[in-house]
Image 1 (spheres, one colour):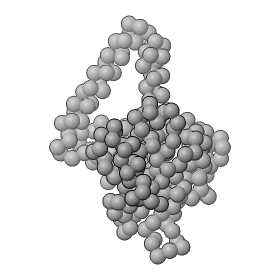
Image 2: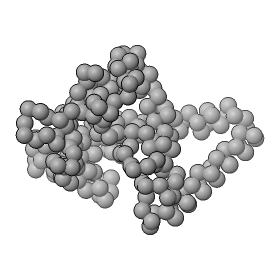
Image 3: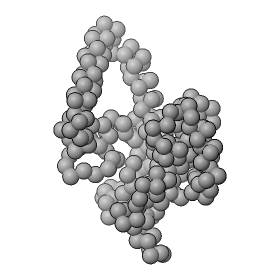
Image 4: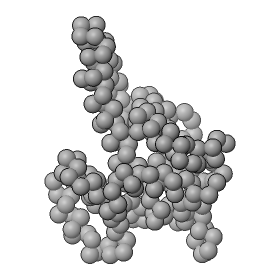
Length: 227
């Protein structure tokens, strides 16, 4: 979810900046967003050429990672082959209910959690003139999903700590979050808005980013919603 500048918005964006358009955008994002990201790098960072997560020689990967992508692709093809034979034996409807629907639910939460972790009206974004590692790491927000926090092993409400210490095991994330809060002070962000309400608010208010013209820091960008 790399934010776009106003100049990079598509021509049809203004037609989607309304309640019906936002519903359509959210439905497509939560159902097709993950496969579109993997196959076409939709909403990912820009590269100098076409980027696909299934391409071992794509710009996403380094030379030492290529064999891992070959192995991953082989696994994907093997699962597709198995699903084809399962559909032949049990029927397509059975496979859709037992495999397809749960996959859609997982994909939907994966995209939603990632979207809400990195999209918030109070989060700044930076270009290369202002960015550094710590600023980038703190450009995220913890969210409260209620009982689902435990279901998701607290990836939802400990994401700031994950940005700062990405190799930390998840079972230490709550302890680390409690430890970093007093150190970060106002730079630690937690939004306890119910996630469904937050999803709609961010879809309405976080359309594109513009530089902060009110200061000398022209490389700092904030979300805007007026197209």
